[in-house]
Amino acid sequence: MILLIAAALAADPVEPTYNDEWKQGYGQGTGDAEALPLLKAGGLGAGAGFVLTGVGISTCGVAGTPCVAAGVVVPAVAAWRTAPVPQPGTWEEGTSDFQAGYLEGYQQMARERQMKAALLGGAAGALVGVGAGVGVIFAADRVINPATPG
Image 1 (cartoon, rainbow, N blue to C red):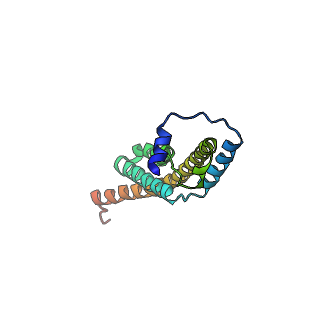
Image 2 (image 1 turned 90 degrees about the horizontal axis):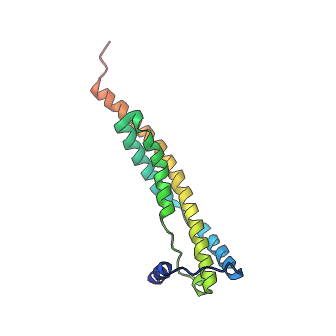
C-alpha cells in the first residue's frame, strides 16, 4: 500500500481542478491531520535544541549564542521537510480529485502542526541547553580555578 502511495506521489502530478470533490477531500485531509499526535516532533525538537545549544554554549561560551537560534530553528525546518504520509483508509476510494485534495490538505496541515511542535520543543530544549551549557562553564571554572581559602 505504501509503495502505491509512493509511486503515486512520484508520478507526474495531475493538476487538481479544485472542484467540490477536491475541496471535500482537502477538508477531510486537514481534519485527519489535526488528529495526529505531535509528541515525536516535539520530543525530537527538544532533543536537537538541547544538544545544539548545550554544546554551542559549553564549548564556545557567549560566542556559541548562534547555536541557540540553530537549536530552535533546525528542528522546525527538519519537521517541515518531512513529508507526512497518511494512513491507508477510505480516502483512497474517492475520485482522483478527492484523493489529490485529501493528500494536499493532509500534508499541509500535518507539516504545519509538526513544525510548530518541533519549534516549541526546540525552544524548550534550547532553554534547558543554555542552562546546562552555563552550568558546564561554571563547573569547569571551579575545576580550573579552585577557590582559595581566604
